[in-house]
Image (cartoon, rainbow, N blue to C red):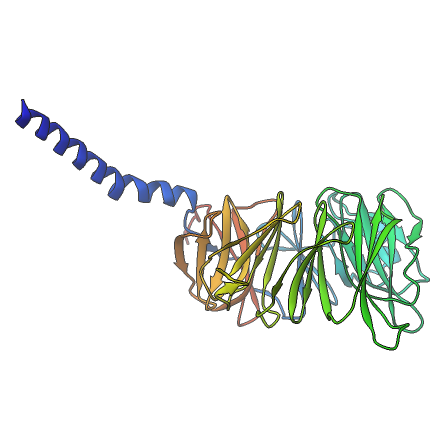
Amino acid sequence: MRRRRKIIMTALLLAVIVVFYFFIPTIRQKANPDLVPAYSADPISFAQEEDLHFFPEGLVICGSPSRFYDLDGTDILPPFKQDDLSAENGNIDIIAHTENYIATASNRIYNTQTVPFSMVYENKDIHLWDMKEYSDFLLLLIQNEESAVEPFVLVRGSDFLISLDGIGDSKYISADSSRGGKDLSLLTMSLDAPVPFSRVFHYVNRNELYGVLSLEDQFLYNIFRLKSAIVLIGINNILCYNIDGKLLWSVKNDSNGLFDAIPEKNGLLLYFPEITHIGEDKGNCLFVQNNGDRSVKEFPKYLSNLRTYRNGYIGLEYKKTLVFLNKNGRTTKKQKLPDPVNTLEVDPYKPENLYVRTDSNTLQLYTTEKQEEDEE
């Protein structure tokens, strides 16, 4: 009986070993299948100063002039109505873009979720510097006659710009809104005092002033808005306040400005590729929940272009290797690339497609779809 039990236990152990060595790699491969290059007929040039914009039927290289391509990388005519093309004098120069909108040099804003693109706003009397997209409004950053940037709210479906009260002489630095919310937080620099200091203006319902936070002895350059808290990035510190102005925590910033920010449903992920500790906690990844609570995780060091991909993350290692991570930051797979790359973008409409810009300034598509070889 004992011998029989040993035989059964040995068989079970062997079965577990077989599953571990043969089936687990298969499961991981299905979770992160190999990305293979999809070569178009003609290479697409993609300069460092240009940006990539996706729309449901293709992509745009934002530049002067901007160039339009279908999903196969074949160049196409700009998908605009004839009246809009005439208003643009037949030449599309995209100066700013968000996930769903583009702005042209003629100060016209288009929704790119429809094909042809639909014009949603036009104003010949402004100098648009940039714009940000939130749940149901755009934040237009407009340069005034003194070349200072002033923020204005453009509600979806409206053609009326809304100013933000209370800013006074404070100069715009950055802004953010929580995911799916109608709140807005502006980071500014106040110059109406002997010593400049930072001010944060909180708005609800897009433009109703809720409160002001003044911070001295802190040079802050970025802000992230969560549902009930804000995260401020400064040269020396990273700080978190609730919306009522209470300091929740502060840690020293040793990143030298090198970090990737990934907004998530439950909060914000900040990845610092070159540090080993955040405050007293070992790790290089700071996760801040929507209420301001924080935790530190340890991700692989020296990754760049970290972003969400499938059920985890993807990043670049030394410009030559794609690194796939799970939600806990553990490396699940690595894949070497044939050419060095400096940026990568995931197609929001076809998440199996990954676009990279090579060091030779060429746009290359990688996909999980099997490529058929041309038979000549």
